[in-house]
Length: 466
Ligand SMILES: Cc1ncc(COP(=O)(O)O)c(C=O)c1O
Image (cartoon, rainbow, N blue to C red; front, side):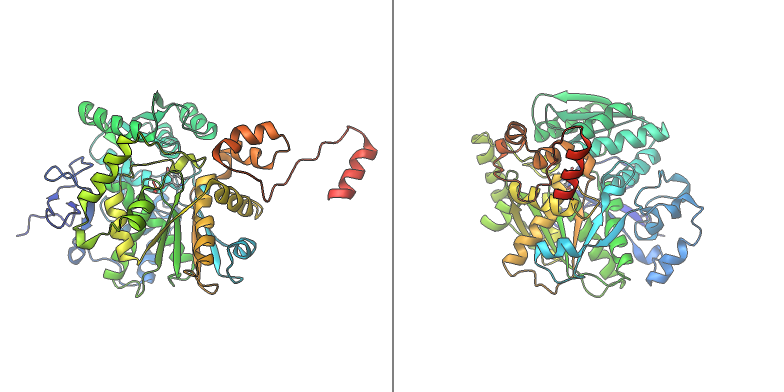
């Protein structure tokens, strides 16, 4: 008789590979300190054999689990019983063909798709993973949940706590390191919000310590359950493309949870025989927070069957500390110098024949304005994906005929300051918000026209500019 459960936690290091029961609350392997995966013994779980098997599960949309764009794929991450799942209807997001943005990127018409994760209930992709972590927190009877955040994780956690009343949210943010849109969510949804002196990396180190000491459930993406939910972004992309994998997935890289989750999703889908080809993955750093790009492209750090060069990574961080280097980009959501999922991301890059690039704040804002002109828009960090796709196109790594999916991770209204400053005619506002970050011009600005409250002047302005 087997005693190992069909779903369990497992250390990602092949040298360790220790497994743990789902009932344990862990954010690192107790044996070796590396990251943990949720693993499945598929032979005992009778996984779906075809996409039709999966679709059959969601015929009943009145079941909230099938309404959720995350949980309707639950047969691909079966760690919870239906009655344990906590959902607020997350993941109702859209893959949209974007021909105007394709022109900007340098792709043929019909070849660029934008995955609008800003349409989630809290306005960012985080809800995909939060519903999964929150479900696990509920399974283990947590009463408090905590995170460090650049703003979107905290908004999402605060929302799940506010809606369900199942636990209390404790949020750590670096002081001055969060946009007002995101801060307003945490405050309004009733989270205990701790602004600590320091940046995200400082807040992350603290929340880990405090959670351990006080037995608070940690929902940052070091929590392996988060990434199980985030796999569903790729399931929805495939669904929208009639289950035909694109050539490229391009995603902004901050803590590297998305990229790690996407790589895991594709590796598992291939193992299950649901796809025959894995798309290539491009992870895009902001230039002011480029740890992955530096390690991958300058220091040749690779997954190497799980034997990644720890000494090189440690030396890089030691130098960063010695130099007192701090991340700095107006894409505040990815202003992170110590990405917690680095090792998993290296695995994803290996599995998806990946590439890493960095883009400047100027490139991010120009790309953002092109996305916005398409009518939905995104926050600055999200536009790193589009800016990165453009760079890869220019370098000839992405071909004009490749089918590319860029992930738009957060809603335009999360950070209106950057957007308004980009379009402003007021030099002082431009300089204080953008100029200070090295942004020199608003290439695609759509300036407001100042006009007297006078019928003739208004008509003239419309005739002139409209
Ligand atoms: C809008 C947005 N984009 C991208 C990221 C980075 O995602 P990841 O940490 O999965 O790399 C974040 C993380 O906070 C985010 O809020």
